[in-house]
Amino acid sequence: MENITIRAKRWSLEEVREYLVQHDIRMSVYRLKIFEYLINERTHPTAEEIYEVIKKEIPAISPATVYNTLRLFLEKKIIQLVNMDKNEARYDATLSWHGHLKCLACGRVFDIHIESLKLGSLDGFEIFEKHLNLKGLCPECLKIKKYDREVKYG
Amino acid sequence: MENITIRAKRWSLEEVREYLVQHDIRMSVYRLKIFEYLINERTHPTAEEIYEVIKKEIPAISPATVYNTLRLFLEKKIIQLVNMDKNEARYDATLSWHGHLKCLACGRVFDIHIESLKLGSLDGFEIFEKHLNLKGLCPECLKIKKYDREVKYG
DNA sequence: TTATAATATAATAACAATTATAAATATTGT
DNA sequence: ACAATATTTATAATTGTTATTATATTATAA
Image (cartoon, rainbow over all chains, first blue to last red; front, side, top):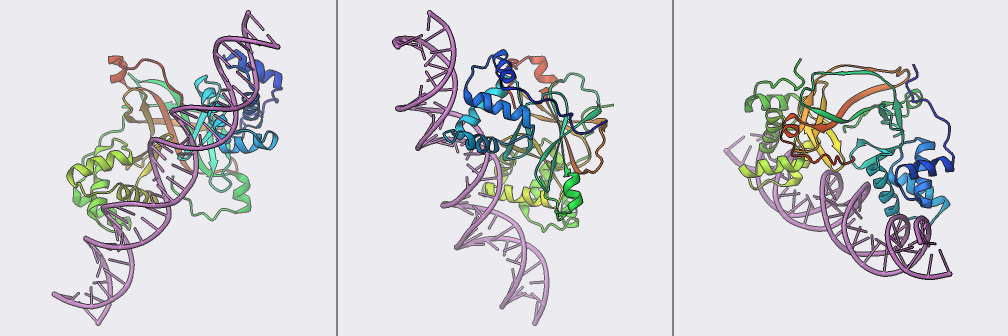
């Protein structure tokens, strides 16, 4: 079983547009571009990374637009927040149950397949969200040993 | 199997003092009090909560002291960061592998026993930390229905 | 014990990520 | 195309945290 989430085929702009409309989101250039980036690149970017990427194409964009749009997507539940570190909110348009691993050397966040999870009795609790966050080193960084092993806390 | 971590016996101040010294931490009144609070109350408090509690006893304490002390404890690896929400770092002096559930109504964070977790192949990765974060409702809040079911994102 | 050095704390300023606000602009329905 | 409505920009405000520096406390050595 592959640990990294299978890379799905890219979504066309038309598919993104339909998906947003289906989820009760009114259309705009930025909403289209931001969701398209999230669903096709799957790099779990921060708001700032999204801002920088879109800015290359449309320099007029403001950071507030990115924050507003991401908040809207969260409210409409078409993306999820990946909360690996304080002061670094990341976003993921893949909603199926999977974990995340952040490489402490290169900073990239990888999708991790979860075969099974068994919890103790949760009698009386009701669960809405589950997040599994791992920290470590990715194969690439382990190989080139660019990490000095002074693993930071947090 | 009980889902909530078994409540261990309270640590005496002398035990806390020894534990800190063993972990290469120089002694001070605040360090003693802060660790004692974390290990005996186990409420996964925020820095601000710790500040408020200690302030009742010693009004001279500064928030910076709490932040500095928590950072030191993290560096010395005698506490762990519980990163449930952006803008709300919580701290836990229990280091054994367990999950956390945050009640979206009352805000309390509960320890959750994990019976097993099986991940897909992690060939080539090295894992240093695992965090399982759940969000939902605790039995108390479910029962008294003080929560309006408009579950917020994030 | 006293002098000296090292570390801890308080007060404050600085910071970075995010959110709120209000005016300007874009989009949608007619 | 026009009016109504929503989105975006620019900027100010907010929040949690970190950095700085002067002072206080603690540890070490004579």
